Length: 320
Image (cartoon, rainbow, N blue to C red; front, side, top):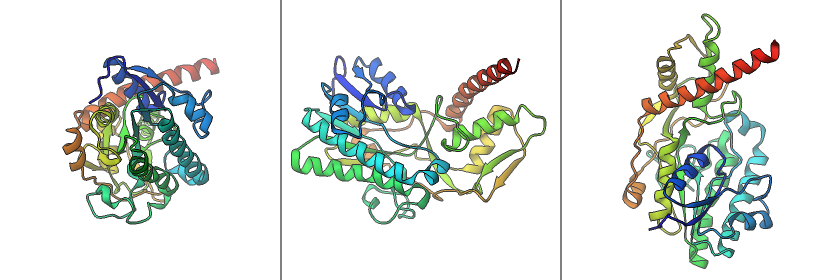
């Protein structure tokens, strides 16, 4: 068990979507948090990673090259190269710096395209990931090997939470490169500016995802640092799957902007289903998601409205 009050903690990616929630939760517990910024520390290099983790007792490795389906299709080499280098350097330099515990965050994209359902941690290496996610997913999958290998050879304490699809206030909402929920919310808000404007959504709507609110994810990572098994990987999710069509309907209803939906079948769905077996995380960490999908979407939509309104005001000011 980590006594957080006064503990020096480094959070790579601490200024990102998940990182901001994690840093806020750690500071509320009294931890002394340092956030290594990419403009100062290139974590793909030994020197940059060493400087980023030096002096920390606990390191959370969240920094990653990441995007939605569009970004993945345009930058496969960048995704696999940068994420492999980030993971390898942070593990080695954390060990050399005497870090007591490393939490290296992986993704559900690491799983094969069609493992037995629900996905269990032992199935990570039973097949190739879904093609649109494969470069990123394989790089994230390697974190489990690093964790096991560093425990076996160096007794270096680490664990690898495998996070499901996340959402919440503050996520990137770029229409080409973001995750599905922020992009959908932005599309509904934009459609609300034009009478009878339809919403165009990628794919068929039949793909399903387990969506976890970002604050729940942050709490799971703290529990992972406190209780996670040495060298182990474990799934973190809400335990509930919803189709993209259901999410679209919910966003329309909760935003008050229900519109005709046009499904763009020329765009990919991504992996069809991602059900997770959460039994290991429940047993090891005692983790259960606390924020319902409807509550999380309400909070996410409210924050997105503020951001969208600010953009509209800025655009009008520039035209004036």
